[in-house]
Image 1 (cartoon, one colour):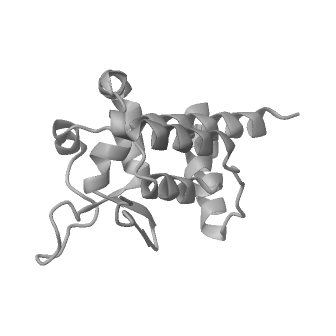
Image 2 (tube, rainbow, N blue to C red):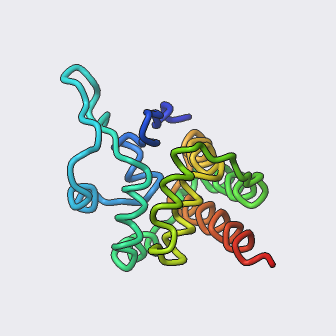
Image 3 (tube, rainbow, N blue to C red):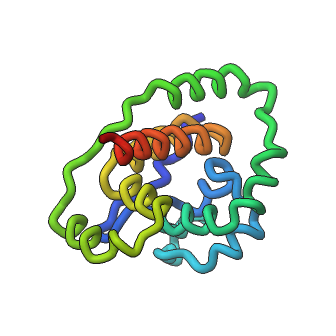
Length: 169
């Protein structure tokens, strides 16, 4: 079953619904609580889990708490009835094109203002979220009802591609 589209795009970024945090990112309820309040609160007539979190903020929290999150990821096992679908999803992760995007003027201004103060990993994060098709890929991954293993593999692949771009002579 394909999950409902768990994303919305707003003027200031990309958001993921709370109900996708556990399956796609492997976050426990305690981790979601530690993440803090949602960036966009649901209206009173929406479904449980409809609160929205900034994808960039979720990933920053994961990066900051990587030891804790990695322990959960290490215990994940693909359910028996999902092995074939998981295999197909991992093949998709290994082959989907990673594309660079044109930057808007606002993105260039943000990059110019802080680039020299960013660590290499923060530069990769900035590029991942602002200058690649990463958001579309994560959305497609969620639509495939993928698990955290596929998310981790996709993010590593995108980050490695960005490293290659940055280290080219």
